[in-house]
Structure formats: structure tokens, C-alpha cells
Length: 205
Image: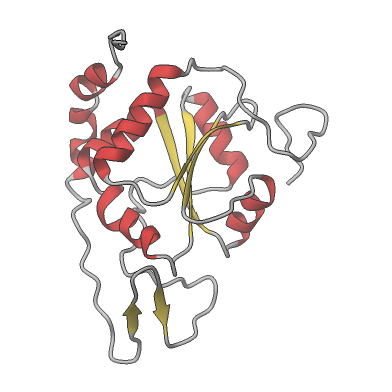
């Protein structure tokens, strides 16, 4: 059986959005990480372990998070901004000891095509699972493994799609493209298992 071809939003995104994101992507080249004399990191096949203890607020990443495209604020503020812009929340919860998290920061988030797609229809928010915001998020949207990339409806707080494990830039573009092709803005998603107070706008978490 042959798949019925239909126009995909991918063809429209990169015509209009790549130019808009060009300035941002130019500063997203691979970041070199320098290890100081007092601190050493050992890289395993699926783990990054640090020998010296650090405070939870000062997290050490082999490849730092893409701060230039990250929304700075809490989850409620993220939803508000995304709703105002009629975009979806793209939430990345990381575990820095898992090398898949490092690879997302190293390969996927700096990619120009990924950034063009993200800028078109998403507001990006990344948190470490041990942070206050990250642990609070996971109490509402539990995960069996990390990292995860969730697509959240900002209006309802519903979980529309979850992307697990490491995704290459091409794979991430394909997943986000497929999502946009198959979802209509404002359509209600799957709610977190926690009850709502007064209205879907207020999640008890």
C-alpha cells in the first residue's frame, strides 16, 4: 500500500525561518570544554562522572546547555509565553551523568536545521532533573529514563508527545516535523496524572 503524499510544513519552515534563525545559529557552534587543573571529568560509554563534588546549582556539563535558545523562567512562565506566541513548549529534561544528554547539547541543539524548526513552532526549556524546576516537572510528567524531550500544550498543560533517548539532528528534525504535520494548534493533549485545580491552567505540581 502506498502512502498518500501530502504537503508537509517542512517545506515552508526553512524558506521563511532559516533566515530568521541565521544570526542565532552562527553563535551555536560546537563549544570547546576546558578542564581546569583542579577538576577532572571521566567519560564512560553512557555516563559522565565528576570526581570533585559541586553544589547542585553549579552543574558541570561536558557540553554546556544551549543558553542562547533556552527560555529563562519557570514552567508557568514558559506556558504563558508559548501560549501568547501560539507555540508549543519543547521541554528537555536532562541527566548530565547520561552521555545521551551531553550528546544532545553537543550535536542536536546546535544544529541549524533543528534550531530553525524549534524557532518556528516551539519555545525551548531545558532543565537538569535534580534541579528544583526539573524535579517539579518530573513529579507531574514522570519519566522512566532520561533524557526526555516533551512537547507540551501550553493551554491545557497536556503532554502531546514524548521523545526518549538521544536523537541525532536529522532524527530530531524528522520528529518535530512529523509532530507539526499531525497536530493542530489548540488541540487538547494528554493531561498529567495529577488533578487540576479550578481550571487546566493550574496544575497541582
